[in-house]
Length: 368
Image 1 (spheres, rainbow, N blue to C red):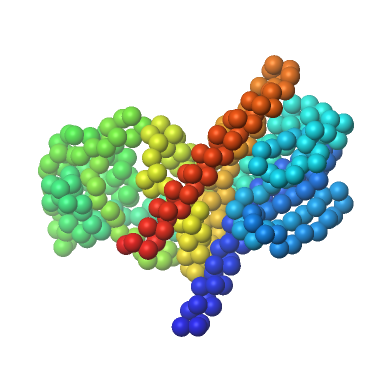
Image 2 (cartoon, helix red, strand yellow; image 1 turned 90 degrees about the vertical axis):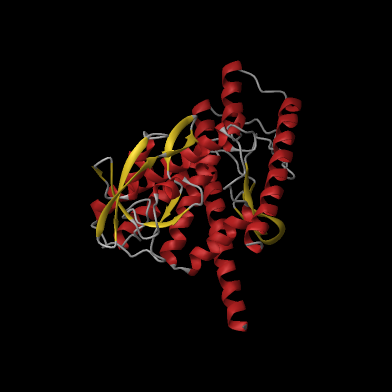
């Protein structure tokens, strides 16, 4: 019992450190570009709540707080709402953000996004060099049915657990991805699905179901597929192959996450969206499964952080980029009052959303 508690505490610590590292690495991107362009950075803070560490190095006071949610680099000449005391927010000399040309301001704002993205590429390349776990997203798996939803198109076809789908309309199917691609253009159409069951090939004919995706009806069976409980590792690859496959794998993840965010923006919903508690819980679970699973999840979260920060809301880097771009076009600063109103509306909205998602997280964790 005590050993289990100690293990849980240890993995909780590892999970929190992982999230804190990603936030810190994001802020480091802003910090490094500030240093490159000689912009003063009075403070560099990671986390929220009570401070547990504080040290001044050079001109910058570095601090670490108890809760690893959020981070902040104070940039001279750049005022940000809800970031505490900012002694040099109005600074306008040669060492201030305001005095720099547009391209330098843009790179400072993009620094965190770039660092999060580079981290994901580095992790994926390193994993291919040491033996990448065979994730369904990156490696093909046979389309073997695990379960069939009640009253679904799959049930009407007569699909059963352990059926291996081998063809649709005589088109050979070898992987789950091939099956999904074949189904896309068959929404609400009659089709013949060939399955391998108990050593025999059986043709099943009925009408493919449908669901909406990006405003378009696509074919859907509403079935789940079998995956191993733990994914075997592929053979380690050469340095050059690891770079090639690591970049390719990261690009696949970026596209998938971008598509998910695009769908979320087109059709706002909290269904399937995890809040901070669920993210930490998933990070803890991945840490329990081993270092590679842990780093894969960190790479996913890092890309999520990068893409979320591109959203043009004032509390995101994308919003700061938007404001900076508008000011470069109109050649004058946006009035502080307008900035404040927009920032506070966004902060309140995001805090309320996080509270709601946290409540939903707790329901998912404790109410099965």
